Length: 76
Image (tube, rainbow, N blue to C red):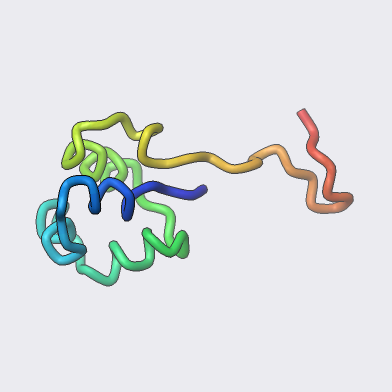
């Protein structure tokens, strides 16, 4: 899963620290989210989407969940 948090933060001129405070997490959590090293809980995803007044699916993009790791081909 990837996300557009950094993009939306820039649009809204919000720092990582300010965003973290708004959704009640540490700034490091925002850093890890922006680097795609952490997948948020549904509650956190919802709270982040609310800050930017967008849908969760506008902020988070699900990647290739049907990828078969054994041969690299997609399965449906």
